[in-house]
Image (cartoon, rainbow, N blue to C red; front, top):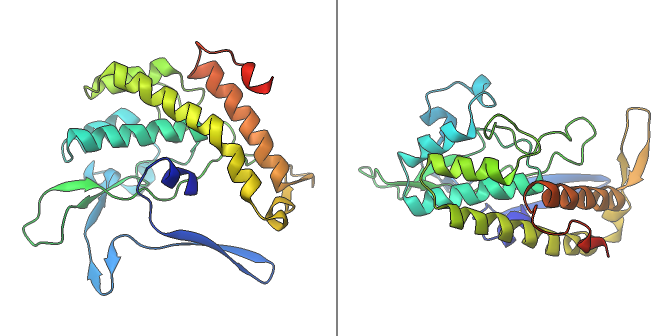
Length: 236
């Protein structure tokens, strides 16, 4: 969530609180203000689909649905978030994790916009969920997403190919250039937390898990999204 915020995405207030030996994640609802409720709609609902279909629709269907309700600028921002999700390996990005919200709480309001982005995480650090880059198919795949897959997806909703090419490059490079600083900023107590890496009881410090995740993501980005660059230069 902090990474998404620093990439310029709107996210709700969130944090981690430690109580005794446990850590608790909290997030502020963006559709409530005191007793006031601001209506929002998950994109899956706008597609007239049930919750059990949240992984069964395609990313193209999500974008085509959103296109009916939001501006072109907002649609590009949604696409940028999809690129960001591929870059970090947000394997739980499904059609209930994207929402639109009314631009105001007026009774006659019809204009909609993207809600803040929420429930953002990478599944690449978990032993049983490392495969997917995103939760919904882009083209015919959810893993090893290629630049060509994203360019083809953009064509479906008339987003300029040069713009997409720049988004992919800038997002990938920002991740490569900055993610290690997030690891460095962690308190030593969190870096040292034991992290279970196998069902047989194997453990690593959380810091080591994050560093391994970063190395693997960088290699995947150079292989799949940044093919014109030298994939070994970052390790020299």
